[in-house]
Length: 210
Image 1 (tube, rainbow, N blue to C red):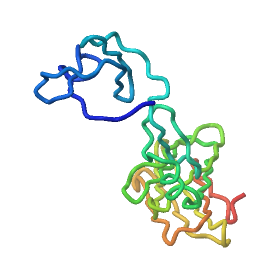
Image 2 (tube, helix red, strand yellow):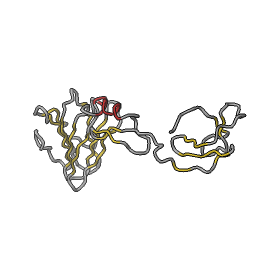
Image 3 (cartoon, helix red, strand yellow):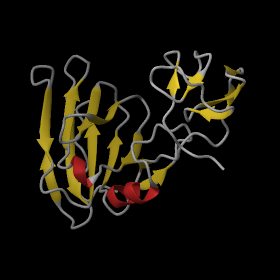
């Protein structure tokens, strides 16, 4: 059965050390046995560490909130140390933003959280695109940016709709190379909103956007 304790190394890491000690002055060797730092495991025999081994099962559980669900990345890098903590922040604490782009090049749609960290960054292409993102409640309100990207005479526009309650939230109007971009902070934020960005002088469809 594994137990935790305080031990001292004669190197900067378990992987580079040659022995493990039970005192900070490195005068008393630790008992023979297996030692792990959570990533690797090494056996100490007669005061000498044997070559490292992969520590199956040593990587601690951790979780990330992905699209409203808690997911263990399997490498210990998740921001939540327990499933319960993840679910407290993640489950039922997200909103939905559906997005669509038309099939004319020259436009860009960016969505930022309340710290202006990008949640979405997509450009229009010759193929229509769509998808869904799930901002956390702690990231609200989010900001939508419609941006002119390229094309002489190109006009970019976007429309934001409230899918939960119905109706239009915002229409950007024309965005050309002189305007550059138009931001809109979606507040109050509906549980489910949608944004349709168009390029090529095409007006976005009226709400509700399918």
